[in-house]
Image 1 (cartoon, helix red, strand yellow):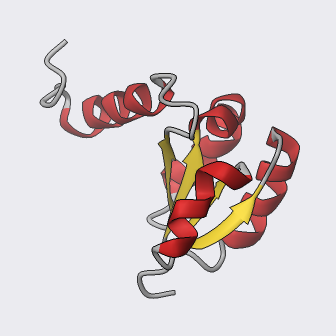
Image 2 (cartoon, rainbow, N blue to C red):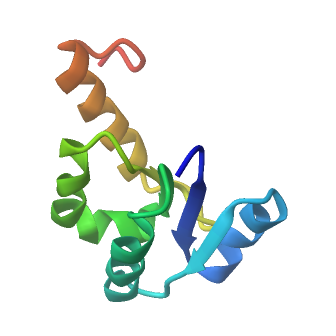
Length: 105
């Protein structure tokens, strides 16, 4: 499982990652994303998940916070950012460091 990276999202949003050599998995809704995530979590260290799919899966994704791998990161899709990924990063930073060093809010 050394350095393996995957992305889960709608077909248009993940296409550019495929060109960069990242393993891509299409998911058109949260149910499919959850199913795919369960399968790929065993084989990949870093998994990107588009914000539209990550937001409704917030509670499900918390189980990955307790393990070193995989690291699941929420990223904007082709539609742009909803702010969800930024908020998750901010929360994780505050939990780990006790202070917000990037956003200063």
